[in-house]
Length: 244
Image 1 (cartoon, rainbow, N blue to C red):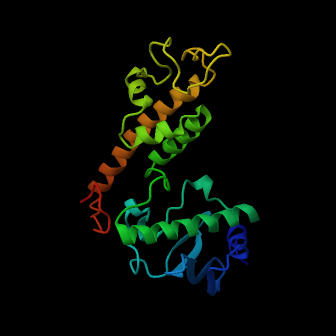
Image 2 (cartoon, rainbow, N blue to C red):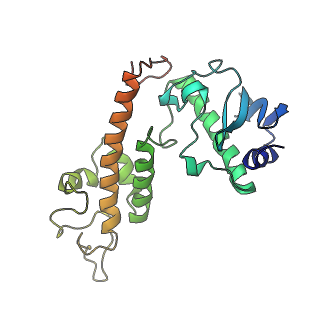
Image 3 (cartoon, helix red, strand yellow):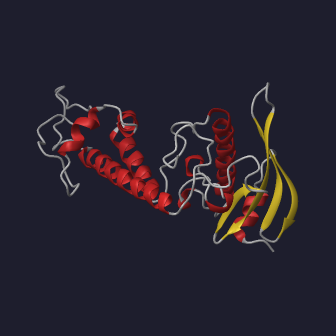
């Protein structure tokens, strides 16, 4: 008998995944992801299996269509695909199994784009390693504060309202100096005046965005440096890579 999460995954397999050989906790098949009228499908032979407690996927023969490992393309050691944070891709019921396949389909579309352009589409992945958790946290707080666009701009290194606020974040990351300035969330009081930062109901989320982004950068730098020291080399398929 297959494990619970694996059995749920196989039961939810979409039409674009043609199941071939199966065993207790492993299945191989052809992913034929629909693309468009010009290029009907994007086809990849896949292996789907349990790895520890997770259900994971990779090329049947890693390195055939994609690099064996490339963190810029979100391919981990031994060719395993990185579909997101562990709790985002966990399978525990029929709906989460369907979501897992939807993530895999999107991921394969992104790999097709990366193969053609040498670029990973923006806003379709979290930062690598431990930085991913801080990235997700920052996204969540930015959404609550209504400053998602400003955060995306700031994270890409371009100027936004958060660029001005970042130097004001205390080293402890608990609050901003000069709390009498208007809050960047843009919300106003009933009299039309903007909320001051220290009185804005979203002030904690604004501070959290800056704090989590600072941690994201720190953890990402550690990840890149550690990867370099490991001796991993650039696969040469992406236009931008810190390992090149």
